Length: 330
Image (cartoon, rainbow, N blue to C red):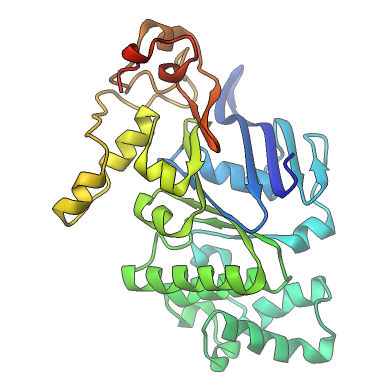
């Protein structure tokens, strides 16, 4: 584990049994680090395993294998539950605030519970603390007695973020926090999240499928496909020099509104095949059914992660050390 790593996943597996001897390999050997104070963007299509990583880290799923180390605390597959310290220090904001907030409670009740559980302030200071947190997420004080059913989707998400802040966390997983919201509300929430990161020193694992959002909020980006990490790079490197064919495919599909922006995109990488079933992932590289650069080796041998430059790693046979530079195809 690096000296400033807050969260480290080492060979993490999360399988779901669907029938005898058949499993969905939702997370299949993921090793990843989130450094203290950074925003790590985790990107991929629906079903890639992004949210499964989030739920496994938080203890909602009991990992099949591998280890999780958070803030010096090692969590193995044999660990049952999460410690109270973990639950205070690590929080999650879900994609759909409507399903994550109790519709029968008002905002005061929703926010007072974590304050009481984690004993953040004395009981006689809870109301003042709730008003302080509402101000942090830019909600007016009169929201304290509103219910989730009486407010809009963006406001519900702000209440969810406020709830996450109640325990004074160091680390927050943001699981598609703006994907179901209007663009104007998205911008407001993203700006607020970045402000809070600076003001109180938060670390984020930001999960999304939106490559445009990721460019504006992340320090590093990790790309997932069918349960595996394809590429990890600093954000500037990731967008200027994408290496994995899947990464290039995603970036080439990002909509732009000017010729200047179009010139910055990688050349169009077409996806000609279908996404395999997560129950029947093909041998070799799992992207071989869609990759225009595949070789015979890609059909039989799963590539391993290789470091291409400082902080930039990729899992693709095109960058194997024994390949001739002229034959890389990209």
